[in-house]
Length: 166
Image (cartoon, rainbow, N blue to C red; front, side):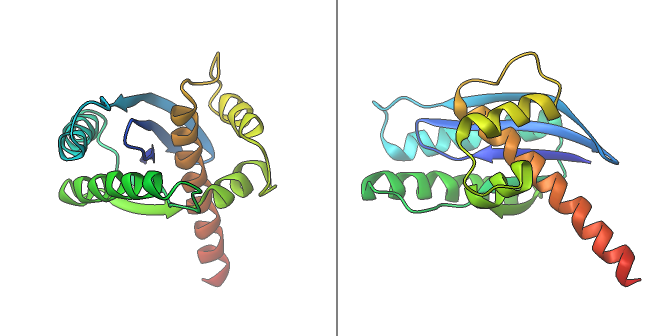
């Protein structure tokens, strides 16, 4: 099973693909999509969609974990991130990739068992779980891999629950 994790944004979209085999998680590829603040928003969203299409066609994930929006102090920021997230969801739907959403709290709980873990704790766990030589940069990339790991964990827990109910 290949899972694509996505940390949405307008300037930077973090992404990471992991392969899950039983309890084993392996990083397949990761990186980020950057758009210029000098471009109109519509062009930035198109660029995100095109780049994401290339990533999906290359790595062929079956499912995607996309960060849910949470409270932002800056209303202008939340609107542009929401628009980027909408573009991402539409692109994934068009490419027939099943989408799941997770809040930062859910990701922290899945990876650290503590919903108030700080960013550095989550990043260290991502590095350790995927046996990476360094913490992926920028932060958006580590966040995307954390989302993919969160989804892999959720899938395992759901499978355990199903087996118990059978």
